[in-house]
Picture: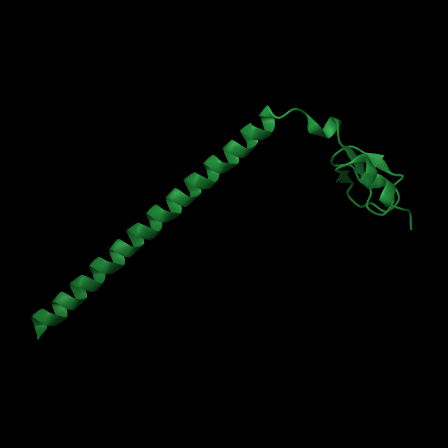
Length: 95
């Protein structure tokens, strides 16, 4: 009976240690793949031409307010959004 308890206890410890090693390895691989994906995305963005200079950014509430990426509307403070097509600005109207 003592030998059976010892065997069960030993197997339990072994299984827990294997599970911990697998979890640690999985977390490490996940962090590595996330970092490489971020690096790839940044490299891809750097290789693209400066689209922000060609894009028109407008306020969703005030179509007359235009600017560049990252600007805010001077009337309401909302972030300007990219107008994907010049015709998109024609459908917006002031409230």
